Length: 335
Image 1 (cartoon, one colour):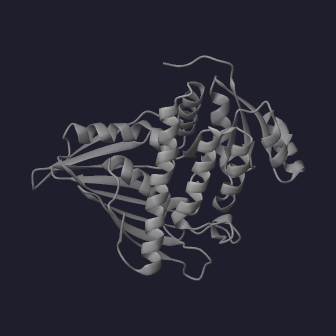
Image 2 (cartoon, rainbow, N blue to C red):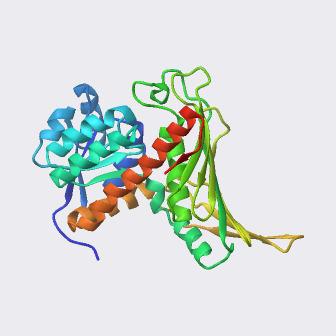
Image 3 (cartoon, rainbow, N blue to C red):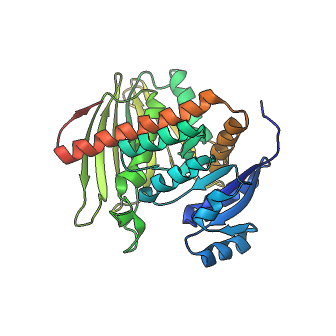
């Protein structure tokens, strides 16, 4: 059921590439949302973007101070997001925050507590959650097509970024875990439909100020997850689930353009010969689906969904924190 009301008015805090490439078109595609303004630390940059996208220009502080904004979308570097989430929460506005929402469990707890105290929603924008291919995979598992799922195996990584890219900044809390590894953690938990009970992780800096590659082993009550991620790799963006009777795997798992129809492959065999079935998944704008889910929960004042948003931030942050401890101390960490 959709709730009908005046449009939700959105402001964007930060002129990030992800905002221009994906978020702005997604917001504009949704009939229940009005994109009102965009902010930059440099007013001239905000004005340039505002003209280009038909919105109003603001500074960070003036955007938050506006009375005609319901939701602030924050696509800032990881190390800056806590400051602006806390300031936005004080203004009483709901918040969509790009992943990773922050750099530590303690920081996530501060953000959630501030938003809960003010009664505003806080949403970590893991957009792949809403792409229909993952629902297809979960259905195949539920139907017993691969038997008992034993191992989730995923990889997300890129070739090196240009020197000076914010992902290499320790001050901005860059690094491969916060930028790419977080996706593999999120999706392993979603597909295995459990929370890990222990993690073992390695992170390597290779002369950089932040981790540029890593791998992790997540133990669940039933099954395991293996994942690798990094900034010095052949581009990879995929996962598979290996079960007792078969395997299901993606062609493209996390970053999926709205015009791309990904393929899900189901593989079984009789011990001698593989049988492969390819399922083409419809195209989907996963940013628009994610934003629509959030805004419908806000409109409905669905307190259960808002609490679930808080909870999932803490659960994700808890696993990432355990991975950092494991890598730093060289040991298996129980959750």
